[in-house]
View 1 (cartoon, rainbow, N blue to C red):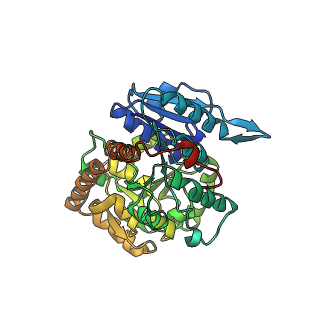
View 2: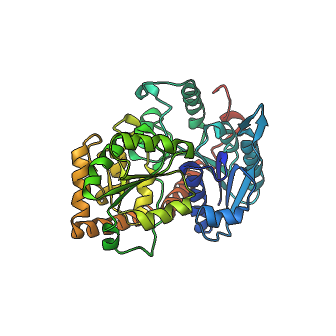
View 3: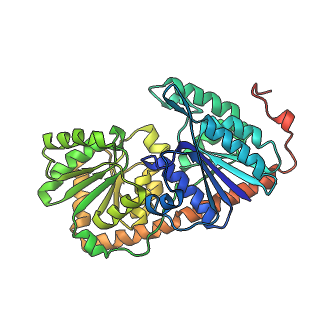
Length: 402
C-alpha cells in the first residue's frame, strides 16, 4: 500500500496544521510505507534540512515531500494547484500499488470522490469540525454552508472518515450511519531522554503552547499568572504571531502579571519541543467550555506535554480527558482558585508530581503517532477488502448526487 497525505497550506507555515500533516505522513513512512505528502511550496528552502531542523524528524527514506507552488491571482494564493498535482500523482501511483489517500482539505473531496472510484484507490477524510450539522454553531459564516454542502455530497462517496475524538465519531455516525469511521487522537512523539521529575518540578514554571485565541483560555491564564506569581511561579506563553506579542504583554501588565508572564511567538516545532524540555514544569490545556472544545477538538498542546512526560492541568472537558486520560489534573474551565490550587498541589508535592510525570509518559506511549498510523493502516486495509469489486466509476460518482 502507498500512502498519500494532502495539505493545501504552505510548507513551514507556523502553528500545528502543517506540522500535524508532516507528523501523520512521517508516521506511515516510519512503518516502511512509501508515503507522499503534497503541500504548498512556501518559501524556497532545503526540504531535507527542514525535516531535520524545523520539524525535528530523523531520516525517513520512505517519505517523499511534494512542495507545490500555489496559484497566484490578484495577490491571493489558491490551493487548486496543490489538489491538481495530488490528483495526477495518485493516478500515477495507482499503477504501482493500492493507494490510500488521506486529507483534511474539504476542497479535495470532489477529487477524492472521483479518484476512489478506481479499485486501487481508497480515500479518507480527517475531520476537524462538525460542518455536516451546523445546529451547534451560534455564528454561521458563509463558508460553513459550503462545508455543509461538501460533506453531505461527498462523504457518502468516499471510503471513510478519520475522527480525532470519539464524540465526533458518534456525532457523524448519527448523520451518516453507513459511513465507515475510525476515532483516534492526533499523536505523540514520546521522548526517551528526559530531565528528572524533581529537576522539572523545581523550575516552578507553567507553559502554554499554541494559538492565543480567546477560546483557548488566554484571559483566564493571564489572571491565573498574576495569582501564581505570589507563589514564585512563572508562566510562559509560546504561540501567536509576533505582532500580537505587545498586545498580550500590555494585557498582562494591566492585571498585574507583567513580571510573571513571558510571551514568545510561534517557533518551529523543533524549537518548541526544546523549550518544553528545558523550561516547563506543568503544561496548560485550559480550554473554554464550548461545544467545539468539548467534542470536536484534539488539543495538540496536550499531546506535546505528554510527549515530554510533563504533567498537565486541563479543563474538565471530554476532549481534554480523552487525550490526557489518568495523567491529567482537571479543573472547571472558569475556576481560577481551583486551577491555582491544582498547580500548587503538583509543584509542592514531589511524590505526586513524579507520579503524574510517569503517567504522562505512559499515556504518550499509548497514543503515539506510530500507533495512530498502525490503526489507520488497519482501517484502510479493512475498507479496501470490504469495498473490493463493488465500485462502478460511471455510476457511483456524480456531482448531482444521482
